[in-house]
Image 1 (cartoon, rainbow, N blue to C red):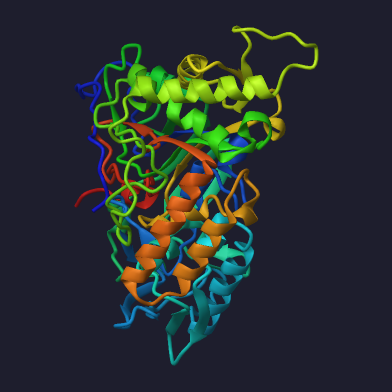
Image 2: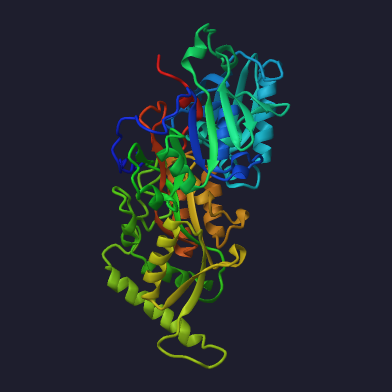
Length: 497
C-alpha cells in the first residue's frame, strides 16, 4: 500500500577484476558519516550509528534487509483480536553478562528504553503503550491505550534495542580500531539459533569506515570498499558523475518528509496565508529536475496517499490551478505585505523583496536544491538567503525517513512539544484523540482532520519523498532497497550456503 519509487541503476555492474581489488574475506563498507556520528551513543542517532546499534543490540523484533519485522529477542508473538495487546514469547538465551533473558529483565529493559525516549518524536509514537507486563516464564505483554497496527515496526527501531547492565544482545560484536568499526557475528547459540560447528564458514567480518561523500565514493572506485551507505540528496551528484565503472547507485523507495519547516514565524511568515505563499510558488517537479531521478513523485501533502490507516479525505492542494495562477496569487500577497510593511528608511519600489533565510547544508546536491528554491521564490518577490545561524533561520530543510508507514508518524514530527518550529495545537489534539480511538474509521477520520489542520497552518512546505542512495558492488549479498532506507549489517555478513 506504500507508494514505491523505481530503483534506478545509474551505472551497470561490470566484472570485479582489475586494480584495487582486495583479497580479504571481510566486507568493507564506507558509511557517509563523521567518525563522531558513527560511534555516537544516546538517543538521537545518526543513520550510521543506528546501523551499529541494530547490529550490536536488538529489541523484541528487528528489521531484515527488506524492511520487514522478524523475530529477535522474541521468537514469536500474537496480537489480540481488538489490537489492544501484543504478547511476546522470548527466545531462550542469555544477556552478554551471562544472566538469563527473562520476562522480568526484558520488561525492565523495554521500560527503560521507552522512558529514555520521552520528549522525542519516537517517544510520541510510543505514547499508546499503556503497560508492559512480565507474565509466566518468558512471556511479555504490551498493553495499549488504543490499537497500534504498526507497533512491531516501532519496536524494531534501533533506539529500542534492549540492554541489560548496559550491554546489548544483538547478533554482532563491535570492536573499535581507531576510526574503524569492526563487527563480527556471534556464535549461533548466542543468537538464539541451533549450534552449528561450521557456522564460521558462512559468515564474514564487516568493517565500517566513516568517510565524507567524496572519500567514500573514491574508496569504492578504488576497490577498497564493497559498498557505500548513507547517501542523501546532497551527495548524489558526486555519485552520478565520474566513471563509477564497477558499481551501481541503488535508490531506496523511501517514504518520509522532504521539504521546509517554518522555524521563525515573523514578518511574511507570521500568518498561515503568508506562509502559504512559499508553498504556492514552488513547482516541485521542476525543483528536482536537475537530479534526474525517475519515479520521484512530488507532493503538496504532509501525509503521502495510500498509507495504512489513512484516508482519501485530503487531496493534493491547488488541483486545477496552474502554476502561473498560483504564482500570481502568491506574488499579489507578497506585494500587499510589502505595501503594509514599508521599510524604515522609507525606500520602496518594484525591486523591493521579502528576505528569508533557509538553514541548508552546502553539499553539491544541496547547493543545487538551494538555487532551485531561491530561483522559484524570486518569481514572487522573495529573496532567499542561506542562514548563517540555524537557530535564527526562518526556514529549515527537513529530510527524514519515516519509521513506520502510518499517518501518525508524519503528524508527530510537527508536534508542538518538540519545539521544532511553527506547529498547530489543534492538529496535536486531534492526533491525541485518534490514539485513544478504537474504531479504525473514526481514528482514520481524526488523523485526516489533523493533517488538514496542519496543512491550513502551513507550518511545513512539502516537496516529496526523501532521497536515499547506496553504492553496492555485485558481490554484496543481503542488501535490498526498502522504504526505511535501513540496511541491517547481519544479513550482509552472512554468506550464502
